[in-house]
Image (cartoon, rainbow, N blue to C red; front, top):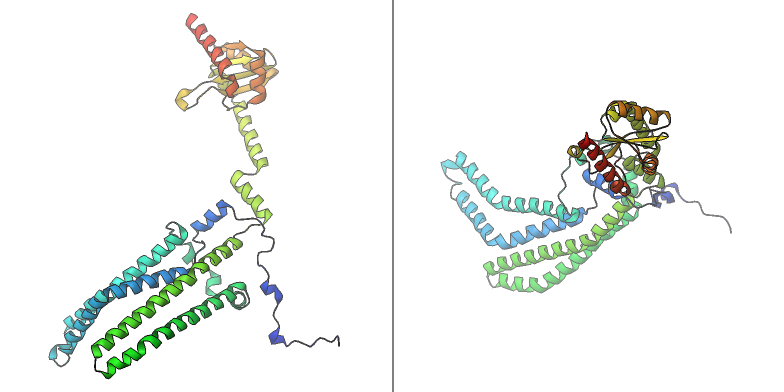
Length: 373
């Protein structure tokens, strides 16, 4: 009795179709990735919510302007019926009149539909997004992956949710429409039997408006959870692997090794320009022989404090001292300051805040020397 009944091939469903597509994506999407997707037009939004919002606005517009629209329709019928037997039926003015009446009827609904669609997107996205990325031609859009499509449509939670939404709409609207018809149809039949055609037409209009409003409200109510489902699905799709997080960090912050190499190259270039930097410095602070640090304060360039223009030890420090003396740059011996600046700063750095007071005293001493000279 351990035999297993064979399953027909057409009934076989690969259980992997129900598995998550993005295995290994355990990290929440970063703000950078979400913003990048946003600029490309890939955001969490519900087409159902947008459609329901537009439908509700259009239905409200139809109900509010129904009397004036009926008058427009009556005017169109009178205009054409009064001319259908005349010789002027081929007059171009007849066509222009039709376009005029047509625009007056359709244009308000079209404008409301466009405004509602844009407003719905703005509400969902919390801002206006304009991008041409989503309409760029792509081969996979021209030749779609039908296997992927049917997998997502029929054999996924998304497909089951969409089926449930559709069945829910049909079920709820059918019940509401049945209750409405059960209430109003007997009255409508009595009005027709009594010859109250005008009342019957008015009642049909009211029934139609009620059904449209109920359908719009039902669509909107069902679309609200759809938005949260779409948002959850979008955030799941945007999740990242640990490797992607590392790569993004490198992209934003830069590879630390590369940054260090670039900084070392920049310092080497600055050191190559050491003689010129010493000549242009305000002061050279020495150890007196082992270390030397050249400083320059350039307020016009926007520096808030003196910065290190050159530094060196041993033979380089001796050369800096010699160049400074030959070019009239003051040389101040201060062992703690020279050692501290050499150890804690690089060429191009602003001096640390803890040295502000002592460096200010050194600059004051240098200025006094200049005044005496």
